Every structure is written in C-alpha cells, then in structure tokens.
Amino acid sequence: MLRPLAFGLSAITLVSLAATGLVRAQGSSFEVSGVAVDVTAKSAEAARETGWRIAQRKGWAMLARRLGAPGVGLPDGTLDSIVSGIVVENEQIGPNRYIARLGVRFDRDRAAAILGVSSALTRSPPMLLLPIEWSGGAPVGFERESDWLKAWARFNTGNSAIDYVRPAGGGPDPLLLNQGQLNRRGRGWWRSILAQYGAKDVVMPIVHLYRQYPGGPIIGEFQARFGPDNTPLAQFSLQVRDGDALPALLDAGVKRIDEAYQQALSAGVLRIDPSLIEPAPVAPVEVPALDESILGNEGQPVAEVPVTALTVQVDTPNPNALDGAQAALRGVPGVRQVSLVSLALGGVSVLRVGYQGDANGLRAALEARGWQVIAGGGALRLLRQSRIPPNIVPDTPAENATAG
Image (cartoon, rainbow, N blue to C red; front, side):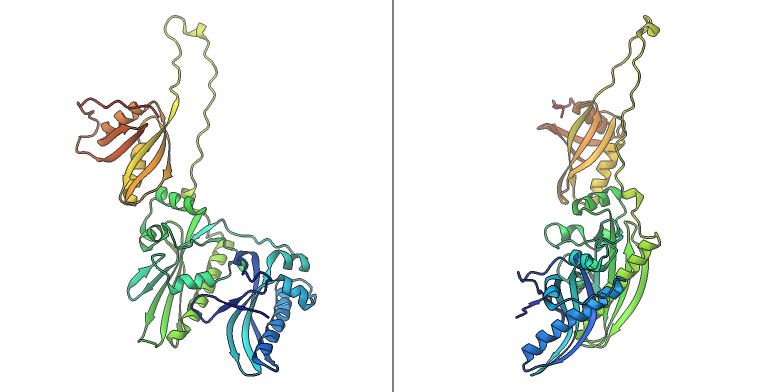
C-alpha cells in the first residue's frame, strides 16, 4: 500500500513510491504536473491507489511528449521503479470514488535512459537563493520560516535551467541572508558569502503580500531580482480570494519567477557578475640572471624580498568593518594577496595576508596609516583606526613581533 508523507503546511502532499519510503532529491527528477484522475472502486483506499497508478501512466506519456521521445508504454512494475514521488495538488476522496489533480516525479537518470534522451540540461552556474517575503510591513528572509520559503522548498528545481543553491536556514543563515544583505554592494563581502555556500552569484525572489482583511483576498506582488547590485528582472501581481489559497498563490509566483530567470539565462542577461570572480594570483615573472661583468664595481644585484604569509585578526562588528580592513591591507605597499579565512560578524574575523616582508614591516606600515596594531601569538590584531594622523609613525617603541 502506498503511504503519504506530509509536505509542509500547505495543501500539497508529497508521496514517495520508492521501496525505502524516502523522497528523492528534487534536483534529480523530472516532474509532470496537472495530471487529472477520476476513479471509482470498492473503497476509498482502492480508488486512491488506482488513481495513482493511472496518474503514473498518464504522467509517463506526458513526459515522453515533452522530451520529444516516442511514447513507449511501460508496465506498472517498471513505472514503480522509476517514479520517485507523487505530488497531490488537489484531491477529493469519497466512499468509493477518488478525484484528484496530481503531479508525478520520475527519476531523471532512469527515465532518460528508457526514453533515449540526455538527462543533462544546460544549467546556470550555482546561484544562491535569497527569498524575501514582505508581510505586515516587515521583511523576512531566513530569520524564521515563512510561507515564501516553504513555497521555494516545494518547488522542483529538476525541471529548471537555474542551479539554485537553497540554504537550510540554520546556523549563520538568518544573520547573513536577510533583507539588509540586498542593499550591500561590497564585492569582497559578497564573495565571502557566496564562497561559504558554494555559489557563484545570487538571485533574490521577493514577494509583497497584501491582505485585504483577515481571511479575505490576498494580493501578491512578485519581483525577480539578481546579482550583488539587486538588479530588477521581472515584476507581476497575482491574487487569490481567501487565505486558504495562499500556498497556491505563492507556488504560482515561484513558477513564474523561475521562468523569468530561465528566460534571462537564455538571453544572456542572467550571468555571473565579473566583479564576483576572485582575481587569479599573478604568476611571478622570471627575470634572467644579471651578468655581473656588466655591473663592474658599481654595485651588486639586489635579492628580491620573499613573500610571507601572515595571519591578521580584525574586529568585524558589521560588513563595512570587514570591507574597510581588507581595503586598508590591500593599500599597503608590498601586500600581494588578502583572503578571508574565517568570518565572524560581531566578533573577530581572520584574514590571510601575503606580504613582501615580515610582520614588523606590515605592522609599521599599518600604524603609519592610522591603524592600531597588536602583535602576539604569531598573528597581528588590527583594531579600529586610531586618531594618529596618517603617514606619521608613532614614537612609542613597537612590541616584539614574530614573523608569521
């Protein structure tokens, strides 16, 4: 007997047909939606099971037509092995009748092999998904579970050309992924966040929900935005008659926003911002050895100062503090590279600095630019800018610092 599994708090139910009872990842399946069934049987349970069997057959034929493959009929046993789930979009169950509109998910690799088509799709680079819901005048990202997040969790990304990276919502997600992040333009900050989630760029689907009165009509204004500059891509409005239809409203909004992103990808509009790509380190240029006979007695060739990897700790109460510290380090002559090792908003973040010199030299250069620097434990601690005028080295003796 087939067993239903509850999916979220909406009217949609996801049912696994695999022997293990587990739902496969959405990204590894083809989905066919809107399969209508109307079945009568001796009992409600028998009618429902027969309806799901019919839905599998109809869904397989619809998938074959969509992929342009010959519609080869398959026995129910074979369909059971390649169907990874049933999505109940709407159903009515009577004593001996079952009427429903269903969705069917097929294992991508197995279905493609049977139909003789490629299971691969031309997909975008990994895009970090940052959904924002405005409701009651307040925005919500990952600070708490929202209806908009649930709608994106229900969405099957396997049929999309966009490779969405969907955070789980725990750990640092509420702190890093919120409405405030949409207004930050610092590329160094964005690169740090994207690296933590394994993404190359970001998409921001936004919905503003307007309730006419409790339990009454709801209007949803949807926006598709992308990139660190929060670039608008598409905007539209949808409406439902009562609050019970809110999941359907949001599901329709998710589908249309995904279509907008896919169209932008095909048109070349949705692409990685070049400023988000970490510049590759410059390869050292080999200089031929000097002929000492040419120099005569006037001098000897000067050996190049080696680059030392130093650890720098910096107070980061907010993203601007991190951007300022990185900019200050990159502005020091002799600094070849600055990379983020660990991020701690509200605490101390750690940077790795490639400096052509030692820790004492870097410390002196930073203090000359008005920064307070503490050396110890093989690392430098960069504090907020002091009131020392720039380009003036303090008269106080420096502490002993160990080169990193």
